[in-house]
Length: 189
Length: 298
Image (cartoon, rainbow over all chains, first blue to last red; front, side):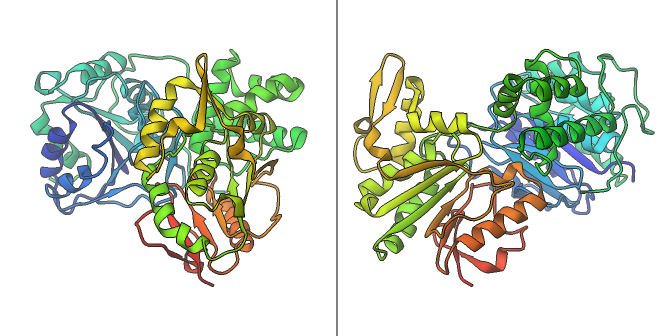
């Protein structure tokens, strides 16, 4: 299998978009998915539970030093940056916000690109800030695969547009086709 | 250290379209070599050991240092840091993370009040180690909490950090006025029983925490990466510090804490941390309350 990790970044409108994507993935989806969703204070808890209702994959908040396992959905915990290490574990950081965001999509995508190279697929979904554009660029620079939600289908187009401006996406697909693209990457159709 | 294969820029079999942003980017492998050389040089020249820091976030902070020193490469940063002690001071600030807040993560302090304070009441004298105290935000949080529980005069808090310059700031207890609103909210959510404004004096655009809060605090330099145990403690708090260490260094520090706690001693970690992935897991049991508070059981 060519890919080993999927990273997903989204902010405004992300809950609905993530539900749509996870809904379309089979129980046997083999790749780990690491997700940064910008969350406001007070929205910390409950987010994972809502997602869990829409997928048979196990949804967990990533813990520091946790080994990244296939078929799991890892959420960046509130108020931490989420990064990946070369021994295929997660790392957390409380460094200051990047582009006003903690967790930041750029931070996850850049570390995933550095460590996984061409074995990572990045997905940018709806979002109201440009956090994620630099990360998308790094994924392309390191030879990874980039999927951007078609801005026309995004609740907020800022993030998809910023991603498309920063890097050449491999696929630009409407929201309801993102899961199909991921299934194809993981070779489960 | 791991022996994982590293991926080099441009390598790979995906059908990749032409890169729209061909900005120069060192290969990952070369950058790893440069980081190894930099941290080895810093260790041998200055004694600060970053060799077993978690690589991904260390890499980010080193890249930030490259930008803020306005040099082109990590090798150029190394040249400057090794030859110019002033540049090293800046480097030290850049690569150590000094972001926190008073009553950061209020549910933790609420659980401390409910679950740990009753245990502490049974001791005539209480020694607490705040390891990696940075600018002191959590030290003062603890002092306030213990004061309100009428325990503070039985306590001695040992607040340590590897960086002397940061410790001086911690000791000064001065924070920007604009964060007081956030701290006040944290204080309330953490179960504060008074008004947070009783603890500081506003002066121009800063707030000075009342010096009486540090009457039982001893600030001192201690490096978790290189120094050993120095006392026995009833409580050790080390929150969001070990996330910057790799597993090897994390194991060292957990050993250090375990050796510094008597049976029933309390260990407090950050909300994203746990003992789950460490060898010390069986030495502790979690306290009630669902926060990252543990008690040594064997």
